[in-house]
Length: 511
Image (cartoon, rainbow, N blue to C red; front, side, top):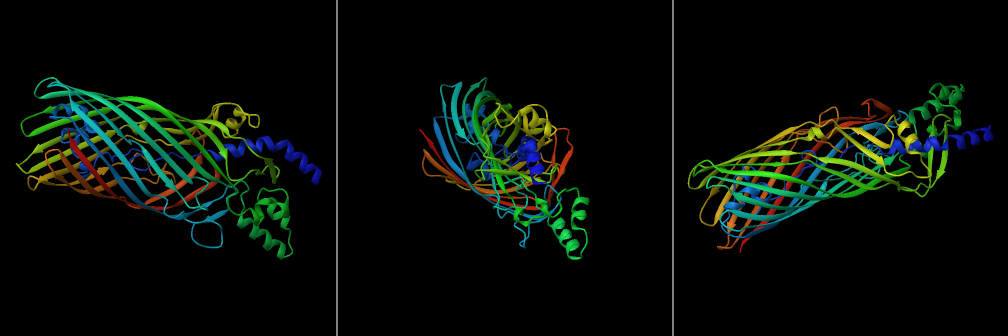
């Protein structure tokens, strides 16, 4: 019997390995703000919830909000600062293993937990320089973070088989030029040069312990019945030797990560129009940018890997696994921002704005093998997971296009001090059906306050604070193949609550 099992294990080890790799990389997408887009590019903008910023030219951050409006600056100037984000994310829920066994997030006897505060703190820097060349032409450059996300659950998170750590870091360099067509109309164009680095990790339940089966087996055996028959009736072969009823396999056995980076370019077009002496309009369009994060996929939780093969109801030792060269294609969304600013009185400036973001370009999230390894046949890995050739993993996203709306105002209290306030409503591209542990997102609302202070004719500073709130949201996550069919018994259900507080500061200097 032992010899027969050993031969069967050796025969099935390659297929079992391929199945484990496929399951390991069914990774949901990365996101933190609306999608994974960030708006924290200016303290002055944050003070009024970024309302109407494409219709205002008050400092060098106009390079980001509307390059066309650089023609309104009377001399060269620089803006530099940062935004500090402190976020709290709480999950309460339960899951099931790959064999349908229960996993509870609450503090109890099993090895799982609710993941703790998976959000935490972030610093987001920005820098801009803009200068007129002559009465018609101005140029500028911006360095900022347009996209990003960072989540990290505690070890033993009940949903670790879906999400552990998610990190997306980007840096954009944007050279821009503007041309004043006449006293009312200016146009601008910019190049978006972006660097992006991403890392996704998850826990692996390579030998899924099933406490319910173990308990049922113990009851049958204790009553003098046929325990082997009970386990076999649940689809397992070896009775009392079945790994799924052995408590030494409770919890996650290994850890998987994929990491990569890339450079890419896009473009933006903008327009600034003076409707009257007191009313201005602005608009900016940003293109999609195709990025391919290239790096490696690897098991990094242990030097050797052992896997459960349900076909033979046994644990298969497969040894060490070399990294697999991988690529994660990603397309950043196109967007269109429309702004209006109206000087209602000598002291009060009213601001409104709307931004459309084309998140519908993000239909699927895939991890692709970029070269063959000796241990794994790419086509077999893909087929085993119900995927096309070359795919290691797939997750259906089906994000939707969204709108964000903002209203705000700036009140000039005196020659030195300006006060700001704003409110924004931001739709989430993530639907209830496709919400994941990496994307616990729903519609959000912002309340912001800020102030600007003129130190002298060259120097000024701006500060702002904001609070983001979302209603509690439900999660019901399962793995899917690229036919959008739910696969496997692993699941995660529960509720998320998220609160975010932000502080921002910047300094402006005119040369």
